[in-house]
Image 1: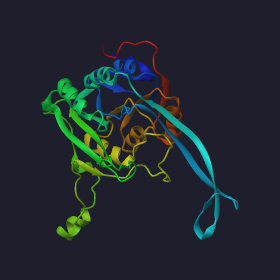
Image 2: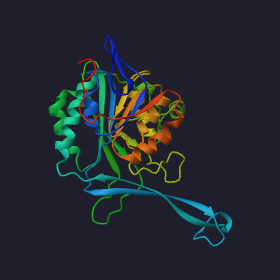
Image 3: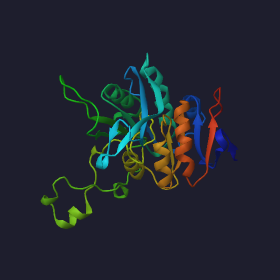
Image 4: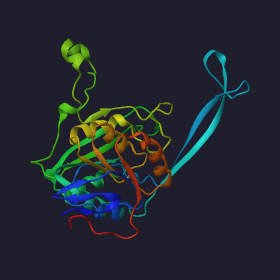
Length: 306
């Protein structure tokens, strides 16, 4: 029997099918509408609970003889303020908000599925305890450290230059992980290995050195929490196969969907920030497979396959 649900998704014979989805609204009823064990990879980058409102304003320059900036060969440019993006990153009870969403994430992961939870030092220790309880300690796979060289300055402590990504699997005997599919990276000391190995590069470890999205790069969308495609590419390559469903229910700028599409995966993205939805519409306009933009249900709807 085939049943049609959220955004035209249909569920038959234990398989989920339909267009890529971008859903606007509260993610909890959306999660509860997705059938059990149909998602291969969940990546989420929830707000880090910094206690403040996060903003980012884009800037661009235009040639102007009376401008406020000097460029190549003394040319003058005028700085123009662009779009202001913002989101709320303050929660009275962060874990009361996040826990039911993690419960749903575990339910909808396939037996071979994997969760990547992207946080920072403020909450990652609490997350580890909670996920050990929800998944079981035997399902903990890795803590990935994403290290970068931009941002935080500090004089009275070590500057914070990394994020933490906790990796849990649904079933430690059946999970999918293909490190051979992951792009290799240069050796830090190529002179210590053979020329052949240096040319091929090495497989990444659990410490990932990768720059943030360049403020002047082509990848930049202007969204405050945008993550680089290189980080998501590594995750999607290792923990999913072509045709698999990838879910990000704090989708932000849509990096997960952009990467999933390029790698031949299908995706469901959810966010309730109008600015995030606008960014995703622009960013995913060039995706070659169909993408449906839909509103989340005002009330919880029955899950397909229930």
